[in-house]
Amino acid sequence: MGSTALQTRGQTQAEMLAIISQASLADSTKVKYGRALMAYLDDGQRNIGDYDTLVSYSQDLSKSGRGFLKAAVKLVTDGLVQKAKASATPDNLAATQAGILRIEAIQGAIKVEKSDGKKSHTWLSQAQVKKLVAACGDGIVGQRDRVVIGLLVGAGLRRQEAANLRFEHIKYEPVKGKMRAVLNVKGKGGKWRRIPVSDKLADALDKWQAICGDGYICRALGRNQELGECLSTVGIFEIVRKVGKRIGFDGGKFDLLAAHDLRRTYAQLGHEAGVPITQLKELLGHESIETTMKYLNLALDLETTASDFIPFEWSG
Image 1: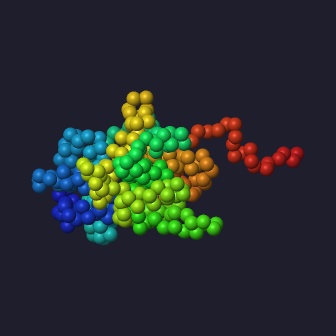
Image 2: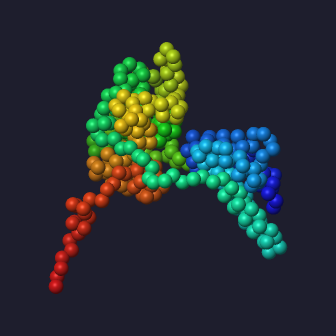
């Protein structure tokens, strides 16, 4: 299992891209990983089994570029480790172990420095959310922007989820004598989840559908403001940043607003209103409560604590 075996053992570029495409990741992330890997292999001379070349090439990349390439290489080579283990026999055990060590060395060839300190996050207050929605403006652009903002902050969607959402994914279900709008959202790893939304957001979606018809909800607009078929994740990113600047998130006193800040805000305002964290986990499509906790701007409250509500008494 030599160093070049990492690419020659059935690992064509198409097959490596197929491995990335089948990973349980957001579509936008798969695209970034695939692009990073293809850029590395582009000249036809480099292969992912060459440790020295990987080290040299990655040193000239940006931090994010190194991160994408490192992740792509690990996805592709993880499969080789599993194949090597599956084919291990008493006769080839030493060679198999040596091959796995070489693969692990390849996976560690690209160094990505960890950021110092905590990542800065933004959570909007209810008042700021109202200002953000109002700042979308009027006309077809403003109405489109308001719907995009609504899906992010009012339903907690990721950008890719919002971009993929279609009007037929909105269903109405009976809840205590009234009909509740529920979004059927395809999230990471192709997993579907149901997200009930407020009457106001549902009404906005109905009015927007009357303007643009069926199909994708988030729509691009041409130079003459004609409706396109769909809006990209980059387009959603730009809308959030544009509208955010209108309410002061201009990189000065406040950081530029990001789409994921609206998803965090959805979780935070829901938590403050009493929505259980277990339900927020399901609404956000998280695998674990720990991930949901990271979305919340929580500080230890010394005035009120869970212990205050435990019926404990000293009986001595």
